[in-house]
Amino acid sequence: MNNIIKSIPRLHNADSDLFFVMAGPCVIEGEDMALRIAEHLVKSCDKLGLPLIFKGSYRKANRSRIDSFSGIGDEKALKILKKVSDTFNIPTVTDFHAADEAAMAAEYVDVLQVPAFLCRQTDILVAAAKTGKVVNIKKGQFLAPESMCHAVQKVKDSGNDKVLLTDRGTMFGYYDLVVDYRGIPVMQQQAPVVLDITHSLQQPNQSSGVTGGKPALIETVARAGVACGVDGLFLETHFDPRNAKSDGANMLQLDLFEGLMERLVRIRKAIL
Image 1 (cartoon, rainbow, N blue to C red):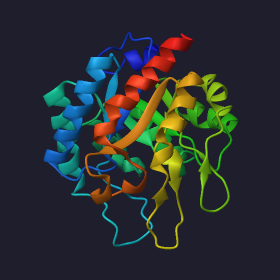
Image 2 (cartoon, rainbow, N blue to C red; image 1 turned 60 degrees about the horizontal axis):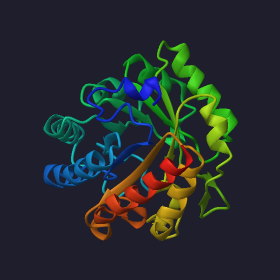
Image 3 (tube, one colour; image 1 turned 30 degrees about the vertical axis):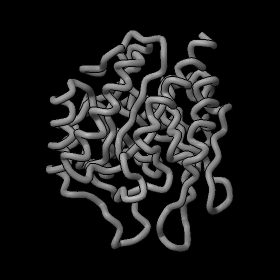
Image 4 (spheres, one colour; image 1 turned 90 degrees about the horizontal axis):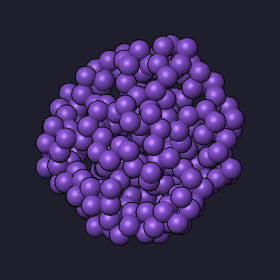
């Protein structure tokens, strides 16, 4: 497995030949839910020998409506992410939305994630780089895979060569996204590549102001990504997606996680 991945503290199974997993809820809704989801993910990934990085947003800044849930408070949510990390001895990842938030988030998590809509923002990329943490940059829905080399170079030119790239689909018309799997090997020439399964199945810009999704296609997208040799998988999961406070429409039901990973591991082993 790539040395960048191996450098992440507390990453179990870091020497695995399999893909690694970034998984967790869209947003931290509270301590109990975060610990419950993390416990399930840890058990499944340990069983299958998959490296796991627990994901949770401390705040959702990109919402369609002003009345949409955005978080329980930055520091409170970040402390919950730290508790997840300490309780299960696993690394964590969170996204941040402004340059002056990078250092704050870096005190609590192991990987800083730059949201897709912000992947060209130089001050955000530089701030993430200067924390010394692994930086996961999501490819903008509006960018070609080849164009992500500039985002990667900004981080490296700021003194940090620990960069991941995540594909979360490309805009297809106004209300849909598609994954162009040709982009995986293209971006792998720049950095290890993660495929964001659940966000790739969003149906954004709905007139209701609530994003839709196609969760029935989660396994289809994941199978194709694993078969194409992606380095990692990103997905959001919840024990009750219908009542999740953000992105419930495209989340994976938590109790389906282990079975899905078992099938994906079989695919990866078949092509190794």
